[in-house]
Length: 409
Image 1 (tube, one colour):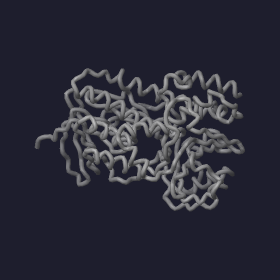
Image 2 (cartoon, rainbow, N blue to C red; image 1 turned 90 degrees about the vertical axis):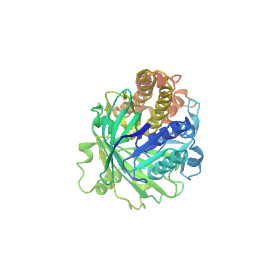
Image 3 (cartoon, rainbow, N blue to C red; image 1 turned 180 degrees about the vertical axis):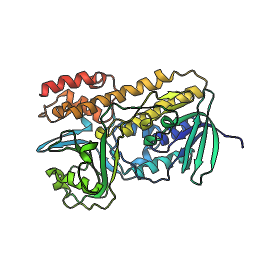
Image 4 (tube, rainbow, N blue to C red; image 1 turned 180 degrees about the horizontal axis):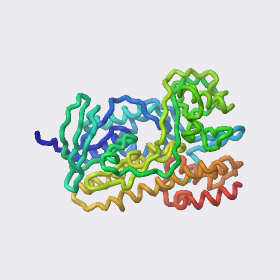
């Protein structure tokens, strides 16, 4: 049987895949999306950064997202014992939006996929790519559906948006160690029953463990009185707590008085999940006839909620380059895609490093100085604008953090 011919195949219908598919259709390109799972499906990463909505708007999906009733978000809050600080995105350094949303990803991802389909993208669910032969004149994919039947697809180009599935990195032996220590996360959703006025539901709350400074919790409020609660720490530490995943998570939460008070009446009505060793990297983000998007290429850490932002930005950048290539132009994927994308990824990496070695915690918990422009520069990073070269905390993140951490010490 002859192989099915398509111009672009996108692997994965999550945020980067849906955004990429819609952007390609808006440029008049033929696109097929192959998704291994059936939507809606659970996914982690529910606190969006402001910069995400720039790409949602570019893909023609902002009206639908605005109308969905997701929890409004205008910043991020940090707590450690009696210390508390927050950042309001309206006080950022980089021009841009001042608010975003906190979203149950099952519903959010399904909405984006439906919007991509509304714009003409074809999505096939429960189809897995099991083999790929890349080539400069097109790649041959072997796809397997839920019944076990396989068929061949000849694609001019493949965009891997498979996220943690990391389809092409596995098939093409592109995976490399991330360089980060192995960390573990345990998480769930709860009916939080937090009394009014006790908790700013317009912000994600990041809480540092009272004893272990490299262990932290997220509390992400959703609309309708529900929240996502999770803990991140070294794998060996979290797994040293006895019991089921729920028992371990609840024991850890109970060790922080602030979270214990907020969640005193919570209903733990959802199975607790866990994931470990999620940090990932690749030897390269592109090759003959393919490019990697978002988490399929690299995932850092959930502490600054950067994953979806990196995924969406990578989709926008890759589609811009691919559209030129399909139009007959010569594209240098290293110069036009990987290098500029990595600039922002490396900026986020500097902040993740500084979080875990304590420098960033010294900075954010330092008593607030009125009208300090450095605070606005940092706020821009927390809003997702990690590609702004005019921001000194983006242009030279390691140096800027080192200097400020010494001042705050």
